[in-house]
Length: 77
Image 1 (cartoon, one colour):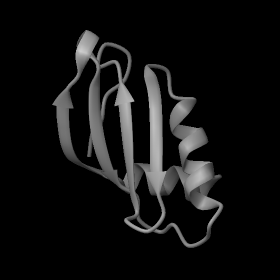
Image 2: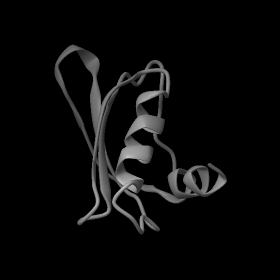
Image 3: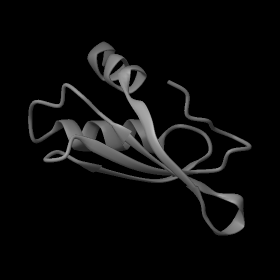
Image 4: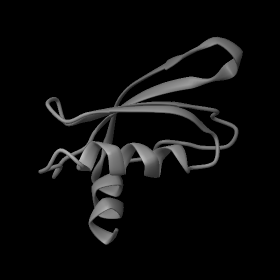
């Protein structure tokens, strides 16, 4: 779990755009994913963040796309 937190903290924002209803999307670089289970673990952790409405994690590109309410969550790097 500490490794997961370190991965998420080390992630950086690469793009953000506005969506309907004031939601935003962010594409995060998620480094250090080294097994097929990592994307599942990262996705579940992101979905538990208050304000996150959706998360999709791709192992091949080592990126996560997160849809969130900027009033409840933010992306910092």
